[in-house]
Image (tube, one colour):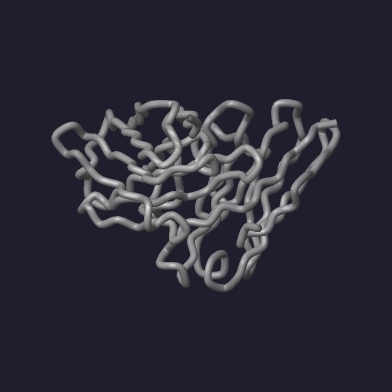
Length: 111
Length: 122
């Protein structure tokens, strides 16, 4: 069981807005930045959101991130079929010598 | 643009040592402030951070693997490496090297290697 808690699955229809949550604690999300990764089958994870809400160059603005207290969220608006993938949140934990934590992952299905 | 190229065997026998190398191009592993990271992906369990090495050579390991891991730098070859000893079937996973170039935060991995499937089997 991951220290960062994500729902195992999420779904939506094309065009919808879907939100994926990531819950942690004061020693990780509460004290450090949160990142989100998208992983398509058979490929390396791709950084989608960094520093809580920033998008790397090339990531569509349909993807947005937010953080409040010890929780974070990834929102995908205007859902498209190619968004079907696994999504992971990540942060560091100050109580564990800066250990990097990943959430358990959320499988996003586009219906 | 920094790129990472992984190399190493895809099959390791139980109780032996897994060894992987990540060659850095487009940048130097001695660049101030950089952390060089190993991560693995278990299909059923998701992503797991193995550890990273700072440009200075300081290492930070996942406590659950710490007794079995060594991450090192080879400055002459601009490479960093992972050694995981006493492997079992539970170590079967896709292993990735990764690093950060957008911010100083070591966990904001924007650059990834292609991944190496390592199977532990006799």
